[in-house]
Length: 280
Image (cartoon, rainbow, N blue to C red; front, side):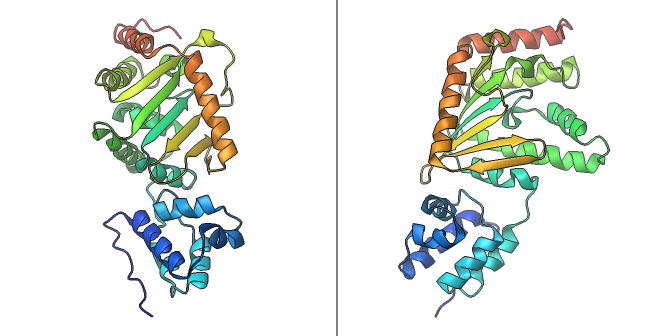
């Protein structure tokens, strides 16, 4: 039997690995549900692996090699692709984000990572890791800025951010850093590259008091949601959970200022920082 060749890591490795999984599964006549059942994962999860929107973990790869008789192909390539520039709790979400057609995000105390400037990101990572080396901080910042390059595409993904007013008012790195950071967000909105809304303090209690929320949609895979806390995060594909999170985001949009009023507030706060007038 001809075995599949190991993948070229310079191409899109997760998409190639997923395509090989689909080919091997169909060759033996298994449905997505049947392949996933022994692993206690859904057929939609297998579909996400095949579409390249989810990372294949080693225990799954070993099972696929056994069931699909692929001679260790998936385990070998899974090990080769396991290294990531992102923390373990965020790596799979970052990879999914890169292939999303739509990203909707609520940010509580920070400007979202995809919208951060270099100076702002440096301050954030230094606060997270006060004893880290300068080289380690620089690597984290570089990885974050590389993620943001997906916004270089003029239309895809659609990025809709709801940012809590607290993120505008929390002075990260001083007035100059904050003014630049907010001008950057406003510039993306004025160029119609993103949609941004501010959830004002006077909105009171809201649908995501627990914190950060991110929703991602794809052309060829079911939607995902991502929730995170200190040094932890979870990518979720349960349809009921994703639907609930989508409703939460819709409620946040309804409670937030309009995009026009949000842009005016962001630029006003940026001007205050520039003039040294921002109040704590």
